[in-house]
Amino acid sequence: MLRTHTCGELGEKDLKKKVVLGGWVQSPRDHGGVIFIDLRDRYGLTQIVFDPSHSKDVHKVGETFRREDVIIVEGHVRHRPKGMTNEKLKTGAIEVLVDKIASVNKAITPPLEVDDRTEASEEIRLKYRYLDLRRPKMQQQLMFRHKTISTIRQYLNELQFVEIETPMLIKTTPEGARDYIVPSRVNPGRFYALPQSPQIYKQILMIAGFDKYYQIARCLRDEDLRADRQPEHTQLDLEMSFAEVEDILTLTEGLLKHVFKTMLDKEIRIPFKRFTYQEAMEKYCIDKPDIRFDFFCTTVTGIVKDAEFKVFKEVINQGGIVKVLNAEKCAEKLSRNQIDEIISFAQKEGAKGLAWMKVTAEHKLESNIAKFFSNDIQKKIIEKTGAKAGDLLFFGADKEKVVNDILSKVRLKLGNDLGLIKEEFAFCFVTDFPMFEWNDEENRWDFCHNPFTMPKKEDLHFLETNPGKIYTYQYDFVVNGTELFSGSVRNTIPELQEKMFRIVGLSEHKVKERFGFLLEAYKYGAPQHAGFGLGIDRLTALMQGIHDIREVIAFPKNKAAVSLMDEAPSTADDKQLKELHIKLDVVKVERR
Image (cartoon, rainbow, N blue to C red; front, side, top):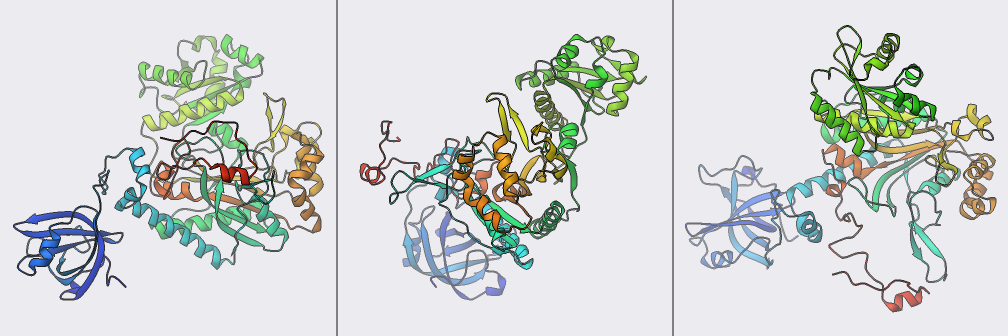
């Protein structure tokens, strides 16, 4: 070993020991001719001392050191002088008097400060990621990620789950997000896809008899990026045979309880709250609700349809809905200007407008539109919404999808603006999702989520008449309004799966071409099975209070899906393209 100790472990127990340390020069200081350097590695800092009265030759070399030089030094541990201890450091009671220099690797001046106070731009941080990753904060965040994954593995291994790697070069099945495709040199004109998830392979593993599978899987999707999306991400991929929905939810509760206790020393209550998809959409206007505060929504279409308010009447006559968001105790909290700001916000998000009424002490509604609602209708609105005196009601009126989108955003804005969102973790499951949704642009049905989800048996009679009424054994796991996983009980009946594909317009030929091998496998005896894919990036970011998942990924891409450090993606040379039988119809552009 080139070193005997790390820079974060020496203490008073090591006094007078001869040690060898290696690390990066953090901050060289000259105090009266004696040079002090904080030597840094990922374990911490140790102060090392170059004293000319101890060794002039070593001191002379020490004078040449600059920030980020890598050095290996040999010396003896001693107490720091009285009054010079640093209680903030684990090694703050000692220092190492350097006897000799074992090795030096010089560094040029770094383009960013290698400490947690750096003000470097995101572009600089990503371009010089190897320097950014030296910062203690970044190293702590990645160590947290590593320990979280280790904790997950340990928990699942004890439950007799088997970790199995699935292929990275797979068959392309162009559904959902775009695939990254890889041309095959030995099979000209043919392409692999990089996996968006191990979905099909884990289902085949269940057919193969591996009843408890998991994998820390790399997944790749060619989609537009945002703060919680990257072209490649990591997920805990899991599947169980002979399992129902409740088995998966119970497993998740146990796993997350263990992870949060181990990593954060935080006890979380189980069971987690459960909502059906319909309950979540009715109450929160979104299928990934933030349940840390209690502003709720209620549909009042049937109540207000007979009101004299023309705006609502027109919407209802055109097949739309009217829904109320009850901002509890906000009638006096929000000024008229603040209410107008909320309305402007809703309009920027796509609303035509946002009506509002206050609940008075006499349990009546008050606003400039209240006169259009009879006393009886007002009473019914108050009863249906559970509103009380002092509450403020916001009304959304439009197509159902638009109303839910707007009110869910208004709800979160109010929660943030009023400081109602508690600094805590709030977990819930959302279950029983619809199987299909109507695509107005293409005039056809689409799968809402995973096409291999088992529909509810009691809804199968809608297959031929109204697929939109078919609900499924699908479940999502949501924390603080962020979806951490989506999963389901899988459809193990080949004939039923083929019917599902026909509903979304896939021909028998297309189904066989894309999924024939899976449907064939199901004909050889398949157990009922269920599973999920839990986002590791999102989980570890959420647990550390981080909003951008790039902060917990070692080498992320920017928002243009470019790696600024190594300039990927790059052009391929003509020889590579010729070997792959590829001709480009774009002009090669070298990135500056």
